[in-house]
Each structure stands twice: as C-alpha cells, then as structure tokens.
Image (cartoon, rainbow, N blue to C red; front, top):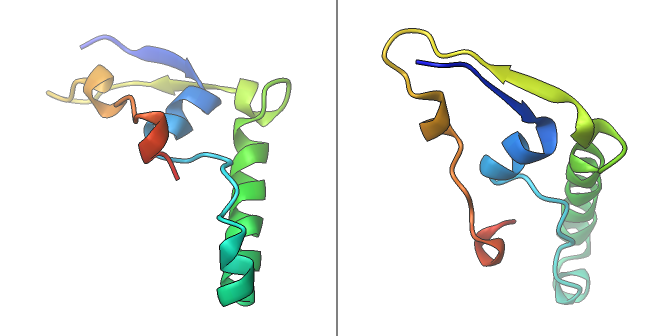
Length: 81
C-alpha cells in the first residue's frame, strides 16, 4: 500500500476533531461542563487552524495489510463535534 501525505487539519477532522463551540445553552445548565467543552474546542481550533498548526503535514505509512486511505473517513459537517 502507498503512503499518504495529508495536512494535520484534514487528518484530525477525519478523526472527528473540530473547533466547534459547545452550545451556549450548556453555559446555563452546566457552567463547568461548558467551560471544559469551550477549552476543548479552543484546543481543537488551534490544532486545525489554517496558517497555524493545521498546516503541518502527517505522513501516513501503512505497515502490513492496512489501507491508509481507509483510515481517513470524511465526517459529515453535522456529525462533527
């Protein structure tokens, strides 16, 4: 199998990592959970930002019978968290 070269932004999004903000309603019902989710969203946004860490590249080198392309699935925008 061939190796793949992909930007970090694409790889992390394929793994379900996004910088989406948590619902604002959570701030009213569970403020601590909202702050934790907001911190996680901030970290994810930094890791996937254009012009920043999201522009780093990953080399996916399959070992054995693994299909590297199969590891990257396109998650629909409405399913990303």
